[in-house]
Image 1 (cartoon, rainbow, N blue to C red):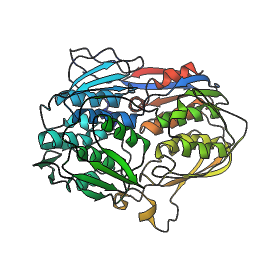
Image 2: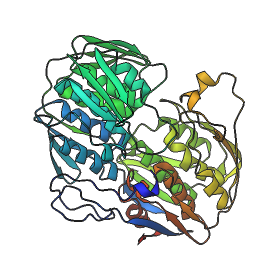
Image 3: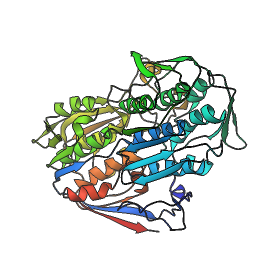
Image 4: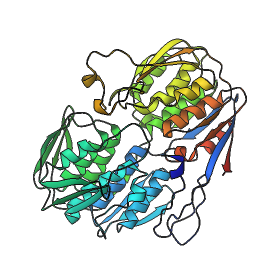
Length: 479
């Protein structure tokens, strides 16, 4: 998201007060008539973080189950919804196309009696990539859909060609019209399909599940993504009367049903937040109990974490993460689930600046997701970007190789232990932003971080929770 895009205007119907720490909206009788003011963090490093915190519901599940709630004309109640910008924008989209939405604390109540239009608003969908999933309920319930080329974080090309190809096998005519920036899709009725994803796709798998659940016949999705957030979506759909099962390794079978009904569901804890707070505890020499962390799918993270020598203790109500002394450098290579999550690698890089020895991070999911490294270098980190020699890049990299560019780096070597100093930085995306916040927490002197609106897209009241743990951090508006 470019900085010029951060002053967004979104509009629907009345909504309750926003949580503390979120940009203030102009009150004009709208759900969200928000003129986002530019904001920055001032972080004073050198404070040990101690105490306990509770992680939010998983962002990457919440956005998708909101779309699933639009597959029925009955009421769907969703608990443990994170109060983040992406959720508010998604709710705005839902209301604009006809949904009745009520927000009560961290619970969202949805009733989509009928879609009032088949077109998703271009301005809002450009901000949230998950808006592309609306193609499924629109085709299922209206037989047509107009979906903009989606936006969200600029994490490489992130094409939706895999979604378009899959949907096109379900008796759907779909074309892209450059004159309006929309994908235009029509069907006489969704038909079941057997579809093999050429590469792993989280959003593509979810879109196909949503389309197949009300399609005529039994669909089989091969090489389907295995992320736990998808299991949240499957569980909700099954509670709504769907018939969705993981039937083999990377295979999902969906038996189409005639109609879905209302249901109630609670979103799983965010595994990305768990890792963020775990690393915050260790690098500051502290100890943080992350409530409900044992319910999150963090096995691959813990496997690498314990090799560093950092401490953790699984308790009844969560996991306590704590510093034990000198950290050991540990290599990671990101990958599709059950591999090391791509959204863990930026915070992990900060941890490696405080580990003895050299470690390598190899990013294989996105072609351009190491943009935060120059900021770490600016703070004194010994970090060297490079492109490793890869025998079979088509098999190793999950992104489309044709989207790769010469200026992209896919790996970084970090040598520690390196003391970090303060700097002025700008958030590139949600997880990169979290990483430079972590770095600022251990830096000598006050750091300034611009573009923190991007952090609000994925972390609820991030600075408030850090303050309660002992961080010295201020949110300041600026022009």
